[in-house]
Length: 181
Image (cartoon, rainbow, N blue to C red; front, side):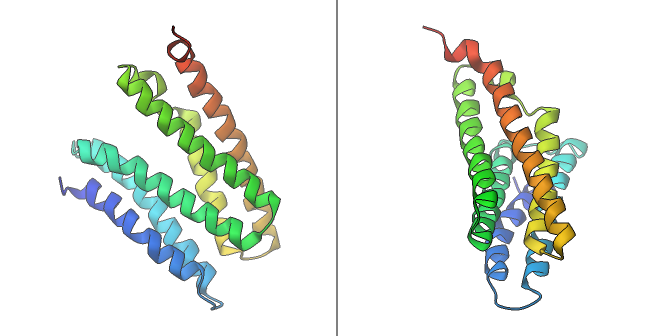
């Protein structure tokens, strides 16, 4: 159970409270440090899946924990950013992204119970959405300068569009199961 990929996933969970504490520190370096921690957590997200496949170390524990760690990490950052920016331009995309994660998690669980989990497997659009989302969040946390904020908000809105598009794609794939009598 404690192979390299699972250790990286667990490490990502461990980083979440550290990220939150640093994000709220009243120091000039806090946003950069919080952005770095979120970046590090994002890298472990890429590495754990890659290493699990490459080293043939996929486990049921890792298959369960990895998406949980991803969703908790992203949701924690989006809630903190919504608090920081206190703007509908941040809060609405954050709410859409968080809601989509809940809907798709529930859909995947339900489809697994139906024996149709493969119908709602992670798609390439989901991976692109995740990349745009992670980059947007890192930039919005860092708040380096005005151009980075504009770029990060642009990426956030791209991620939000991809979030809605991928949710519709997953719902379409599951629709025949959802509408059975």
